[in-house]
Amino acid sequence: MIQSMTGYGKSILQLPTKKVTIEIKSLNSKNLDLNVRIPSYYKEKELAVRKKLASALVRGKIDFSIYVEMTADETSTMVNHSVVKEYIQQLRNVVQAGTSDDVELLKMAIRMPDALKTEREELDENEWDLINESITIALKEIVQYRVDEAASLEIDFKERITNIKTYLEKVRALDGERVETVKERLKKAIEDLKVDTDENRFEQELIYYLEKLDINEEKVRLANHLDYFLQTLASEDSNGKKLGFIVQEMGREINTTGSKANFAPMQKAVIQMKNELEQIKEQILNVL
Image 1 (cartoon, rainbow, N blue to C red):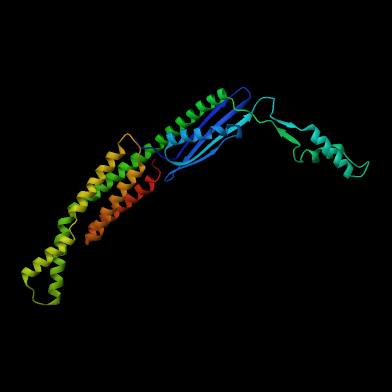
Image 2 (cartoon, one colour):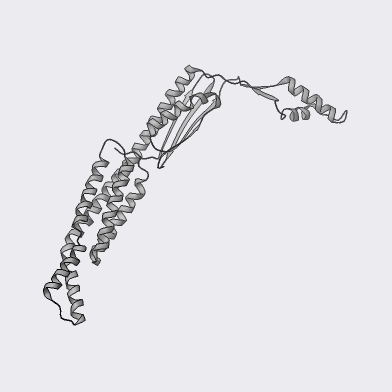
């Protein structure tokens, strides 16, 4: 079962003094690109979070965030009274006597360095266990999002592979006519030259020329690649890179067939195969 690399997961945890919101966003990327934003007092858990994300999401551009909103009356940021009073006194000494306004001085003082002090919150392991469970919930949500997103991709892939198979059958059906057309074209070219030719030598050269235009191997390999793509698509694991390699091989066989075709109706079928394959290539970049 394939998974898309596009996804979103969110979980909200209500604690006694705070609300913790966890968000995970994912976009397609060739490798794993993790961007983790968490409050400073959870920083010691960042490596564990990264390992958990990498294990569950495998690949993609991942943005992970933990937002904390304090809901209790208490706050960890306090006014540094002694420092603010000292600033106000110094500001009074600067302005002229009788013209100072304590409210304005307070506004200025509170903006000065060290006017506010923040008590560092220690990590509560019990609290972190709850947050870790919430991260697991958000991960399950984004994985399910990826699976649901990939379901439509899988339907599209199967339809386009079926279309390519249909065009391949057209190529097979046209192959006999193509060979005869090439033979007639060469014979007419020789006749137009109005020169005498050795029939045996002409037949040998014609066979050599037709061997160079033979596409039997390409048809067989392309058919095998199409079947292998569907087998890989139906496997339990999502392997976008493997599917991408198979698509590249399909492209080689289609391009070679087109270069050897030398027959307009067959080249039209090849162009239609290329168009279907390009659509698959665009979408396969988003498969995990």
